Length: 312
Image (tube, rainbow, N blue to C red; front, side):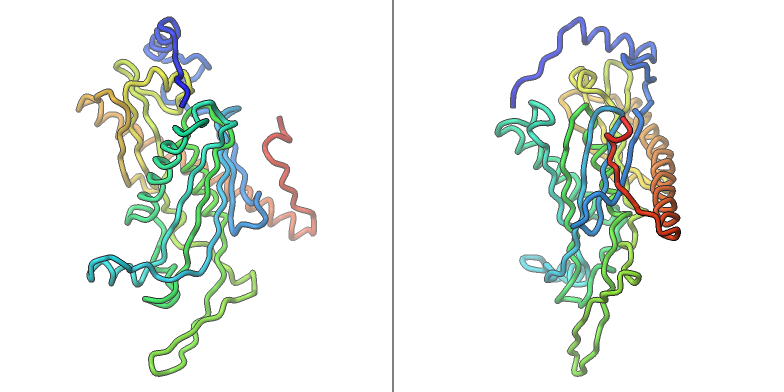
């Protein structure tokens, strides 16, 4: 990974602006850039979404669902019993080399792996929101596997928050075919998939999927939605995972700096409050988009996905 440096004057300018609650782009410490969100952009996927922060970080997420075998190999009997009744989520995150010089070369693999593992831990855990048991078709045999692929198209800071917002929107947009179970007797069962799109359903629990609020400690203060230069002056990051009910679903620290106990509590509470409010705003955007699409279909008007850049 190519080294990225910031001058002492730039760092001092950023630090003083944050102390005065006036960042270089005019935002306050706890202000996000404008969130632009659109779903249903990938026709070959079961669900998709694209999210951009202002004129900066741009993430595209596609979701595919496929039938697979229940994964119970190599696990203890008690764990295997639980897994036998659950589907699973498989995540992959890739940062495009054209998005930033940071994603060029072998160092990009470390970033991709770190982001992939973070998303997988959240979505496959009990705090992930998705009802994994509902993804099981035949216990011990067949289940739905949800494949989530995220691609970072452009970078202007705050990848993690953008990635989780986009993933949640893509899951909202995802429709899963209905599985019809047939009892053959003697404990034998088989299933068919409904071809009626009207019977397809959203993945249960998508609304409880958390988003991330990343708080960057700079000096004695903390900010959200940091730009690349602000990230370079960051001593430590705190990723707070929050769901729509304001429940904290996970916390992860990164960076070499320390966070004082009193400041840590303040950052966690800030992340919880901002995350809950952000989800409310995102859900309004998703529901409004869905309403507009349904209105056009009822009037037999074409539904066109213009993409973000048509309005810029």
